[in-house]
Structures are given as structure tokens and as C-alpha cells.
Length: 281
Image (cartoon, rainbow, N blue to C red; front, side, top):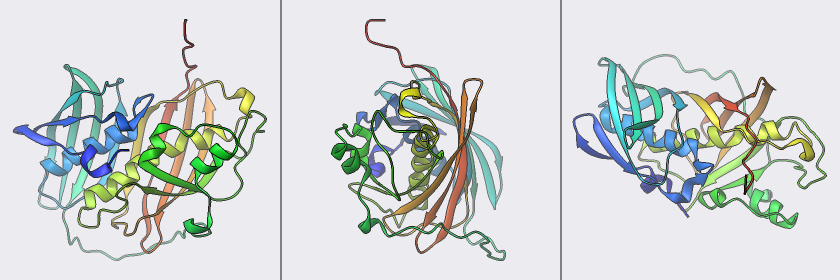
């Protein structure tokens, strides 16, 4: 089991130069992309003197191994109220991730409005977890689920005879063993980063019958806007939808809500479809 706080920690090794150790607890098709993006975001947190992230765009340039990585920060614009940073993640001088992060100061003034409202959803304690649903259907939960718990809202057909449905999803998510980081707005934002990355492909997959789902879709690029609110509480509600597949690409977007806070983040991802290599080929 991984821990979001300790597994995304970075240490300085020089001016605007950091190091992190990748944990195999976050394996998917190699290290999970949202996990790598969260490390890049925490690098920006270590490099800036400002209080919180405003937005992030992250491109995945290669597949990392579970070895240490170096992170290099370039300051694109620095001011009293906002700062733009570029974070590069490298392994053996091969670049793995390129992230662009805007950070902002605390206490910025301006009116507060929220025009969107969260979708209706029963509380998570009334729902069954995704791991339990998969196990009940005779499947095997993926190892990454040891790091967080997902509780889907509504019916979710599972199995080889599953028909195509609507390419969307609504689910509660909390991290384990530590779900909430109330003293650290950057780690709170990391929760949304990983949530945004892990929800896109499952939403797209719902639009295909099981017998046509012969591909995977690693993330090329992940984008998030943080809406100025630090989510409180263990659970996040993720409302996601697949947008379209074509020309080998798959697009998805999502909104992330906290029960007592409202909308905390929104964004999307572009994925590239690929057929997994079979053993012996």
C-alpha cells in the first residue's frame, strides 16, 4: 500500500534541483501518470514561496522505472501575487515529465461565486467499492486500488459480456491509509491530480462493449484548473465523461467536488490508444 504524502515527497539537492524516489506501489503501465504529476506539483510547491497552485499542465514524455528521478525547476515568471514554473522530471538524463504550474499567493481579493452544483450522489457509506464489485464478478482488483478506494455511483456492468454504455462515470474517491491533508494545500491538490488521471480511461471504456476493449490508453497530457478552494474531508466526488476517440486518440474531462467545499478542480486529459504487447511477441 502506498501513501500519497510520503510517496510524493521531494528533497532539494541544489538550487531549483530536487530528487524523488518512485514507489512501486503506484504501478499501472509503469508508474501511474497522475502519481508522477503529483510529484511534479510537489516540486513546484518546494520551489515557490507562494501559497497554493492555480493550474497545472503535465505532459508525459516517456515511461519511468521505479528508480530515483531528478526534478529541475525553471522560473518562467515570478511576482508577488503569481509565479509560473516549469518542472522537468528526468531519469538517467532522459526526460519523463514536463509540467507547467501557476502558483498564487494567499489572501488574493475578489468576489466569490459558484455557478455549478455537484451532481446528486448518495453518500459513500451507502455504496460498494469498485474492488468489491470486481471481486464479486470474479475479477481481480488492480494493485493500484490499494492506494485509494473508489465507490462508483449507480450500476456498473462488469464482465466479458458487458455491453457499451454511456462513456461517463460518477464516483467517490478517498486515499488510504491517509485520506486528507488539511494542513497542506499542495497535497490536497495532489489528490485531484491523481483523481483526474485515473478516471479518464475508465470513462472512455464504458463507451465500448467488453469484446471491443482491446486497447489501453496511457495519458499523453493532463490539465487541471484549481478553483481556489482547498477541499476538506476524506472523500472527493469525481464526475467524468469520455469525449471522443479517433485517430488513435481518446479524450476525457472531469470535475472534482468536495462535499463541504464545492467545485475544487476541473480539467481533462488526452490519451493515446495502443494495443498491449502480448507475451512471447
